Length: 430
Ligand SMILES: [Zn+2]
Image (tube, rainbow, N blue to C red; front, side, top):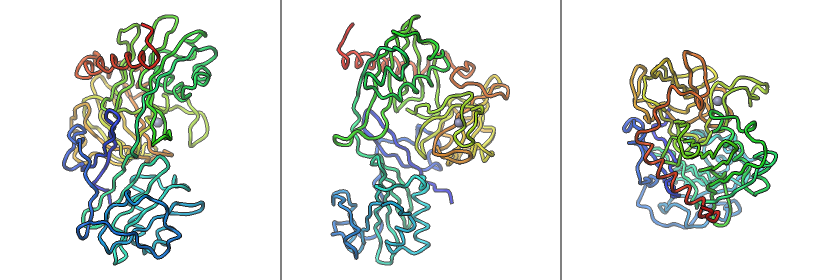
């Protein structure tokens, strides 16, 4: 059964919303996003506070009672921190669920989280009705993200973002031997060296462009839960002073799908990507294959994104294929002007309101991120083909508009705010 409900995480200005909706009602990505997060569905009697009932107090972890959803008097809340060697099915059986109920819980949570990644320290909470059937199951993972499955008449699964503060950081470094070493010396997350290399790959080769003495200034977000830094930081803006001029890179914020690269204040490159706010995780070209273990051609670029994130058409065009295709897994292929095609692979679901042959506008939600086909974890493989041959999506110019349009105005405002924030955080130097 394909779940009709899907979820997406949307971070706007540091505030995270959980969005949950249905393909069959709102096919457009734009229409699907709303400002309000629906409350988890509670079945049964009118919810009111109840003490935790359990047969085995030893298994109850110290979860603050304020985090417990209110339950009718007769429901039992069972919670346990996952230990070494525990499996989800083992824990569900310990909680007293029968095989059918256990399968239902595993399937629901597994639809939003790869259960092979389950590890000690995660926690599982169940509310169980007097008839022994689960009402809700919540898995909390290491970064505080919760996967909440609700059962009964209206089943749903939601992925809920942790309550995190996003904190803006800035740093600068002088490049001597490599960008990586420069960032490391300046206490800037070294993963940004990869972000820079990946995004500049369509403009110039960063490694050969450096001769030493260049400087770099970066703006990024890190995420905190209380005093603790959690998850991976997100790079937002970079200023790179090279021998031939100043390059500025503006990555998309969480409402945008476009990266822009400027040289001495002039736009030299734009890149329309299929997922809002996402960052590249793998380059086009020769690479060591993560599964096959030998050098082979990577025919597209990969984006890091969570299971279920909305994948949008990068340009307007016609859908030419939707379905399974060997290593690509669940795939959507589109045809655009000038013999250009785009492919969106490893999806967990496609927008079932769309059909092969249909024309869709840029930005239309066509599917959701998954890990189908030859894939080790949820991500999007995005491929651009010209006359049937894969080309680098970052270097191809055929898909690219003039760099104007609706996104341009917003980008200029964003660019201004990034530049002044960088100056402010580093201490203005004019
Ligand atoms: Zn790929």
